[in-house]
Each structure stands twice: as C-alpha cells, then as structure tokens.
Length: 186
Length: 286
Image (cartoon, rainbow over all chains, first blue to last red; front, side):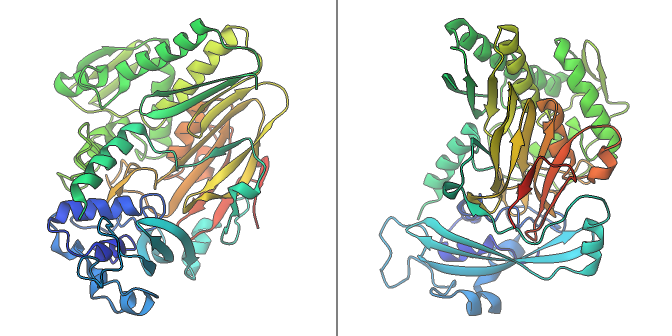
C-alpha cells in the first residue's frame, strides 16, 4: 500500500479506536477533493479494512512532519491543547501530502495541500509533480489538445447556465455517509 | 426557461427545465419513467429485476429501450477489451459499494466474469446462465435522461433540458454554456463548453469514494479502481452514449472509441492536466 493523500486526515483524527470507521471517515473527509488523486487501486495488494500497512503511514512519515505547515499531523485532536471545539472531529490546520498512484506509464505523484477549519475544507491546492516522459508520450499519443495543468476559475466568477461535474453526490450515498459520520465521530 | 421541475430519482437529483409550462400529467410521466427504470435496473432494491437476476439468474424481460442499452454496453465492452462490462456489478459490491452501502471490501479485486457464456443480451431482455449481479451504471442514467427528454418532446416541448446532476440533454434553438467542474475543487471550473441540441455527460472517479483507492469506477479487466484519468466529459447526440463514453474513457483511449462513436470529450488526469478533442465546442481555462 503506497502512502496516500487521504491518510492525512486519519492522522488528524488521531484516536479513533476502530480501524473501519476511521478509514471510512478519512475517505469521506476528502471525498470530493482527494479521493481520485489518492486512488491506489491499481497498486493496492490487499484493500481490506484490517490491513495494518494501510493504517496511518503519514503519522510517522517524514514528509508529513515537514510539510504539515501549521499543525503537526501526528498530534491527535483529542490529545491536543484544547483549541478545537469539543465536537470537532479534525484538528484545524493546513496539511500537505503527496499521493502516488500507478499509471499505465508508471508511478506518478501529485501534491495536495488543504486547509481544515472546524471540520470544513476551506482551501485546496493541487500541485502536479513533474511527470515522467513516458507518461507524456502516453497522453500525447493522439490528436487533440493537451493542456498544461488546469488551475481552474472560480464558478462564481463565471457566467454559465449549468455545471457538469461530480460534486452532486447521490442521495443514497449522502444518507449513508451521514450515518457513518455519526458512527465514527470522536 | 419558463418552468422548472426538480425531483430525486435513481439516487440522484434531477432538474427539468422547459420554456413551455410543464403540465401535472407530464411531471407524473417523468416520475413514472424513473420509477420504472429503477424497478428494472437498481442494484440497491430488493425487488428490482436486476436483483432477481442476481439471486437466481434466468431471464429478465426488458422494454424496447433495453435492447439499445444492451447494444451500447456490448459495443463498449468489445472496444475496451472488457474494461466496460455490466458484470462489474458484483465486483463493485464486493469492494463495498453494495446495496447496504457497507463500504467494506469483502474480496480481493478480481476481473469481472466473462460476458460470453454467462450473459446474453437480446432484443427482448437479458438472460443469465448463472446468477450474477449486473450494473448498468455505465450508461443507465444517461438513457433515463434520454427517455425523459423524449417524453417531453412527444408532449410537444421544443425547448427543454433534462439534467441529472450533470448528465444532461437539451433540445432547442441556440446553446447554453456549461461549466466543467474541477474534480479537485467543486467551487472551480476547468473550462466551459457550449451545449446546443444534444447531450453532455460528466463522470469523475471522486464522485463516490469510500476507502483507500476504492471508488465506483472499476476496470472490468482487473476489478481494480481506475487511476490516471480522474474526470471525463463527453458531448454526444444522446445522453446514453455520452454517459457510456464517459465511463469508457476511464479505461480506453479516445482514439479507440472514435471509429465507432461521434463525440467530443474532455479528459482530466490525476496530475492536473487535461486533454480535449480537437473540435470541442468550448475551451479550457489557461
């Protein structure tokens, strides 16, 4: 199991006793931002919930320590200095992590920085790592434009009729995630 | 648009806009289409046709539109070497995306079972030689968009949009501008496209994520989640095709699909770059 971006909020949760709720909640916290970037499916050997290797490699990871800017990732929210609200699940702070994944052309990385305030993701930055030449060849094999990294524009600065994307998750899924969140909450 | 009708169906939010008023009977007709579709194909209902097939196999009769869906799924299956397959249903469930939304993987990833010898999709229905959990999510939502739009057109509407949370089809003069939501930041767009009369569908692997590397886009050849491509958008004549191509583009190159289908596309990779068809009616932000 490769280190992944979505592991970071797990470290922020800190003390969740059961492996499953913690890891599920981890994914939910990052559901619309990190999930895809962190998908380790192509490499994952045993994506079972008991897999100890997948627990929280970021807590000991030097990268996590050096990159978590304002709040060390290994400080559990519950054992912290008490600056978090009692009902808060995650510690506030800005976190940076690197996700790796296996592409058809080999291993690739993407850096993600996100800011958590009162359990809300308030800022997201995605930093593409220099990709290897093979990847470039693979992606550029066919006609059609390939852009440089897309930064995007804020939707509220645009005048559009509709939006097509992924943020509108399904009702059943939302219901289930609400259930899981309440079960997994600290 | 003069009239707007919002509702929940097949687990997602729908919005139908028409320039002419939408009669009560027409609204009921749309809801009935959704209910009938759900009763056939939902993996999440105990009483659906798909669930019955999963329990005992055998034959499930389908209405006329079932044949079109089967043909599209078979074509995509063949063009992607099995990467797109309705037989990923049981693999999705095994990875935790099941009727109970358990989010608990129960099996190692495994390739979907082979179509031939197990599944026969004919003009009048589906036959399973052995029980199997099917999933038509690759193109089913798009087909329901098409069915609803056809219902409106049959009722005399000349200007209408059916939008199932980003999978949409429009009929009418002129065009609308649609933002392509940034897969890493739902408050941002990576670009815009113009939609005249036709369909635009979107798919992103971050849409439903429930564990390490587990989401709802599986490669039928490996049973594992798909990396590298994180979001796809397709413009095509109808929404079923656009929806199916959105799924296929996670596991196949556009050039493999272009000989068979007429479409424009935007792909976004997990390293933040994007790629578009040459004739895309729209642009990505620099």
